Image (cartoon, rainbow, N blue to C red; front, side, top):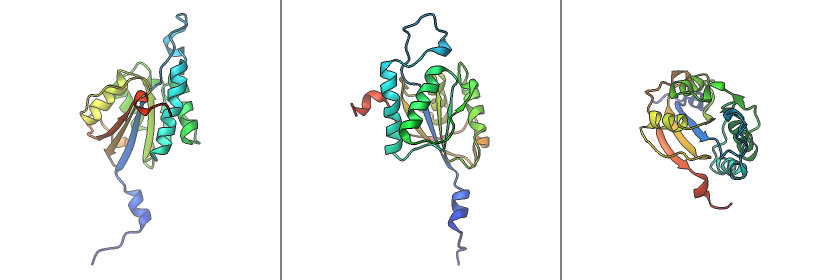
Length: 180
């Protein structure tokens, strides 16, 4: 006879994690006196970021945790996405996501609490695309504002390594969303 396991125990031991990798929305190069870290979103970026938030809400992918690069364009993207998808927690900032490496991205992800099932990381290329390729084996284009949906079969984020193999579920690009 099979042993009955309470539903609460099943949820506690769920190994599938959802990782959402978002490249910041389009930024402005208008003021060439600004440091790269301080560049704001341009008009298209201000339009596309909320659209990606709406997509997350509509797809049932509202993250439990958002971690963003400290760069202004990434922070603003994260804030607009969070507002539109209904995320109500604090957006965590990680300086390691600015001008970094895949190893640093993985290090940030390893700090995510084990109970978090869905995390959104907002960063930059080439690192965001490299992280996606490293974790899934799929090299794909991540233009500004693009969102990659990845599932990972790990016990907890602390077990995540650069050698982890996840599954790329889908990449959403702002231009492919239409004019909603």
